[in-house]
Length: 352
Ligand SMILES: Cc1cc2nc3c(=O)[nH]c(=O)nc-3n(C[C@H](O)[C@H](O)[C@H](O)COP(=O)(O)OP(=O)(O)OC[C@H]3O[C@@H](n4cnc5c(N)ncnc54)[C@H](O)[C@@H]3O)c2cc1C
Image 1 (cartoon, rainbow, N blue to C red):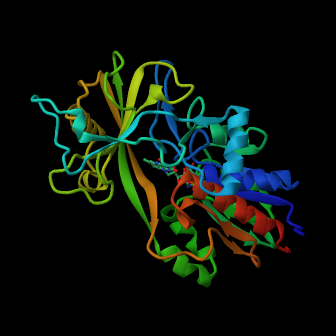
Image 2: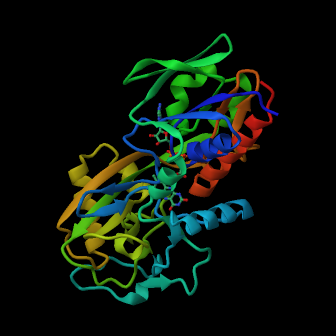
C-alpha cells in the first residue's frame, strides 16, 4: 500500500490526466502543471466564436478491454461519441491529382465497415481531458523548468512563477520524450536504453475554413502514406471535415495534415507558406480554395519507438519518480491512457 500522499504531475494531456484521475480516486493529493492555456495536449481543438477544428488527434480507437470500458463511460457521460463519418483511402495505385481535368471517385477506396470503431471527444476533442480534470487541481500556464529532491520531497520551479512553494512526495512526468531532455539528470541509469530508443516525427496541420459546406464524397480521407511518400505524392497524409464529427457546430472547416516527407522538407517554412501548399493539395482532391487557412506546426506529433519496450511507463521507487506518455506505448490516445493509469497503479503499490 502506498504511503505517498502528494503527487505532482507535469503535463495535462491524456497520459497525465489518466494518471491523475487514478491517483485522485485512490485518495492522493494530486496537482497538475501544464504549460499551455488549457489541458489536453495533442488531443487539441482550435476554436473561435465562429468555428472550431481538432488539429491534433483526429479520432481514437479502443482495442484493449480496459480502454473499451473507459471509453464507454466517457460516452455515457457525453464526453465522447462514435464518429460515423464516411472514411476513404486514396487508391495509391490509381490515385492521381484532381486538377482542372477533374478526377473520378474510382480513385477512392471506401471502407465497407470501419475496421475498428472511431471515437472523438464531444463537443470537441479537448472535452475528454478537460472533463476528467475538472475536479482536480490544475495549474495552466506553468512550464516546469526545474525539479530537485530535497529531504525526501520534490521541489519544482517554473518559467512563469519561479520556485513553487508546495513540495511533493512523488513526481510524474507526462510529457513527450524530447521535452524530457532537460530533466534527464534526475533519471536512473537503467532508463537510458528506453529513453534513447524513442523518436518523434513532426507534423504540419492546417485548419481551413469555407463559406459553405463542401460537396465531397468523404468526411475523412487517408491521402497517402504518412511516413514515406512516393516521389510526386500529395503533401497531404489526411484530411477531415469538422462538422461530420458529433456535436460540432459553426463554420465549415477541414483539418489537413501534411505527410512526414512534406513536413520534414518544410519544417521551418512560414505558416502562411505551408497553409498555401496544403490548401492547394486539398484543391487537387476536389475542394474549392478556402476562405482562410491557418497552419500549426506540431514539432513532437507522433511517437515511434525503434525497439519493443518492456513497460509502458517508468517508475523509480527510490526517488518516487515516474514517467508516462503515449511514446512508451503505441503513440496513440489509447496508449497514453494505458501508460498513465498503469503508472498510477504501480505508484499506489510502491512503498515510499
Ligand atoms: C497531428 C496529430 C495527429 C494525431 N492523430 C491521432 C489519431 O488520429 N489517433 C490517435 O489515437 N492519436 C493521434 N495522435 C496522437 C495523440 O494525440 C497522442 O498519442 C496523445 O494525445 C498523447 O497524450 P500524452 O498525454 O502522452 O501527451 P501530450 O498530449 O503531448 O501531453 C503532454 C502535455 O505536457 C505539456 N508539457 C510539456 N512540457 C511541459 C512542461 N515542461 N511543463 C508543463 N507542461 C508541459 C504539453 O503542453 C502537453 O499538454 C495525433 C497527434 C498529432 C499531433
